[in-house]
Amino acid sequence: MSEKNRDGKRAARERLAVEREKQKAAEKRRRTLIVGGAVVGVLALATVVGVLAANAGKSGKSGATGPATVPSGATGKDALAIPVGKDSAKSALTVWEDFRCPACKAFETVYSPTIHQLADAGQLRVEYHLVTLIDGNLGGSGSLRAANAAACAQDAGKFREYHDVLYRNQPSETKDSYADNAKLIDLAGKVGGLDTPAFQKCVNDGTHDSWVAKSNAAFQSGGFSGTPTVLLDGKNIYTDRTMTPAKLKQMVEAANKS
Image (cartoon, rainbow, N blue to C red; front, side):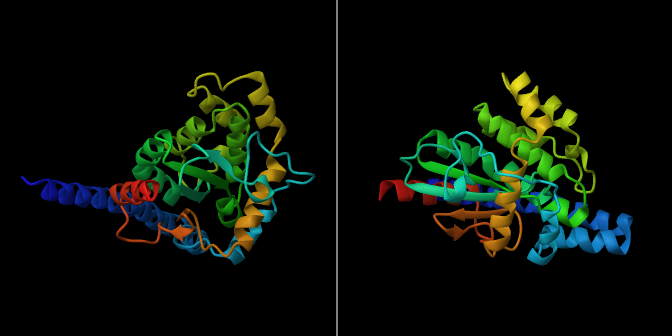
């Protein structure tokens, strides 16, 4: 088999993997519509197919008040981005995510191995922005609580590892399990060296709640339509139906060669 054919088949398999993850998320939404009734169904549908800004405005009612305590090492405008990777990387990936969002989990499941590989190779810098849209649309506080815990993990230098743990253990979209700080602290045990008294205090005190609320407000005012929003050097690649991990890798490598 030629190298061209092998690459073509590999790209096809990756596209199928992406579609399968999207179909799984769609099936979860369909079950929510059936079980939850008309009101919950409409909210759930809005959450994943767009998370419209009008609905997202409800997420401001998080109870987060006071000055924003910025996580260690946060960068960008108003220090609202958590960076992963080297500053010298020629490509930048901006990711807006909600830890309760099933579409975000689908994206991370398919793309995170490639993103980590490129970041570790010094070719890609990733900037994560945390938002709380699901809290606003379905109620609860799991998006806020999980985002605060992730910011606490950033203080401990363990953001990427904890970020991945949160997505691997993500509860059903309609179950607000991440509203429980004890659950978030328990999951920290899956990351070596993270479950410390300092981390526990940060989570229980909601140290970064106001910072998370400020990040969510920036998302709302940014004109974005939903989560995840994924921008490669400013271009929205999540809406590109031809995008695959292999294509992302090719684009980043090309940028680093230029």
